Image (tube, rainbow, N blue to C red; front, side):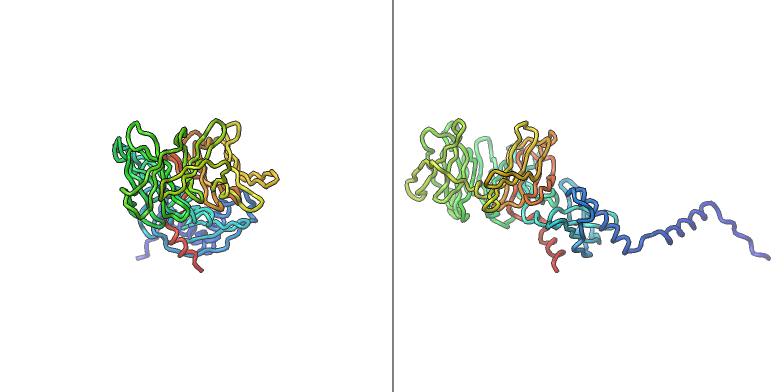
Length: 399
């Protein structure tokens, strides 16, 4: 019997054509790698307003990411904890190196590598929390790699040495002052408990703390201070100078300084002899540590100002002769505060951006503006501690 002729059906024809297309048009691994690098370069050109030809790939490495977010999860993102093969790429524009993570056609931006020396802190609301405390969240300066640093606090003060002071409301008539040492994880240690406490600070060598305290309802404010290693019960209180009201505190050589606004000026009072009777001395001239921190070099300082129209924030480098070079202008921003490390590389601006509570990080060297997560309440502050994932990143980039 003659064999029966098989006539291809419409479905089988489509299958054959698809297989042929896959054979001829699936990119080779080398082509896929170049496609990923090209898309990352285009993304960075757009972020930094740089010409594409000025952006180069200076390092790339195959890695196994710990999750489907390519090691760069965002706050509130549900991420599958499945190992994902991909690549780490370092792109350079000018003198700045930028991090990218990619897998297949997906990539994520990790920001300037220098940004991973510091992190951002903000409070996330806890619904129905009886004492109005929140979760203190740490992220990278591009808003990735979130982790809860402390749960149940309502204010926080990152310190220059990478430690952290925080305030927890324990009831309608009580607050705890907490301390987290540099690099420490956990609930933190209790330094003090009182009716109300504000503006906690550490001295320059991180051995003593001070804060403004209101011991009881209707009572006046005092300065309270103690050694970090001492028992809370041994803390000492000092009445504020006569006629002053609570301002904020900063620690200068010799003791804590109380800054009090008076009309259009500020008055400065320093408390000395902390182990003795304690003596307040008004300072006629006071060189603020913040002012020294904003000095970029012998000739330049950093300036962060709300513009007169109240709708823009400007970050600029100012020379000693008054010449100014604007680094970044952020439209639709009403600033409430800004924070920065000594010898700043980045400054974090907190306030309302595009009519919602937001914070932005600005690269002091390039003027690049990085957006931090939305959804927080209160200020976002820069913390001199690396974000979660820094050690993993260093391992990937190690020669």
